[in-house]
Every structure is written in C-alpha cells, then in structure tokens.
Length: 123
Image 1 (tube, rainbow, N blue to C red):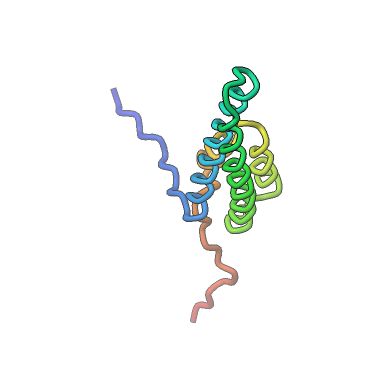
Image 2 (tube, rainbow, N blue to C red; image 1 turned 90 degrees about the horizontal axis):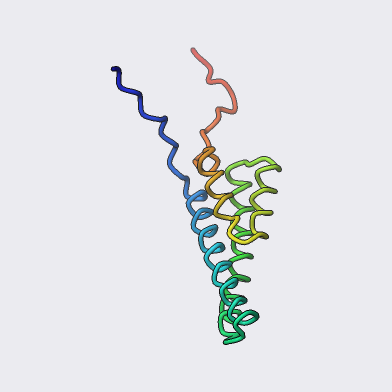
C-alpha cells in the first residue's frame, strides 16, 4: 500500500501575522473574563470586580485588536472582505479566535511574496 503524501505545509506567519494572532487571543481571553465577570455581577450578584477589571482590559484589547487588524490588512494587502470580517470578529464573544484560525489556515497571515515591478532587462 503506497504511503499517502503529507498535507502541504502552511507558510510560516509573518511578523505582522504573529502580532495579529497574539492580539486576537488576548482579545478573546478578555472577552471570556468579561463574560465571567458579568455572570458574577448580574446572575450570582456576588461581586463587581470581574466587570471592573475585565471591562477595562477588554476595552484596551478591543482597541489594540482593531488597530493591529487595520495595520496587518494594509501590510499584508488583505482585500476589503477579509478586513471587514477581521474587524467584525471583534464584536461577538471569542470570534477573534475563529477569524485568526481562518486567516492562518488560508495563508493570509503569512508574508506576501515579493512581486517584481518590472521585468529585468537581459543583455
């Protein structure tokens, strides 16, 4: 029985792609913390500390995610659709993880190949 070839390797993340992935995970983590804080504040009515802390952290993470997503969209030349999906992912809880996974899997967090702007003259 012949061996099946391994799946094609995904290109490594670019520096900008890595920054996007890290900020996407941080944004999702702070969303989860805020959800737990809201549960403790509004359902169990035990403490407001989670909302106080994670509300601030999530606000900062949200702004960082939006800025990094826009910078990466320009640097890696995403189209408007990918950029809008990445930005919209910041609104529902934990969706930045899905956006990061999709962009990584499709190779849109990898370094773009250098394109030749003009043909090289041959002597």
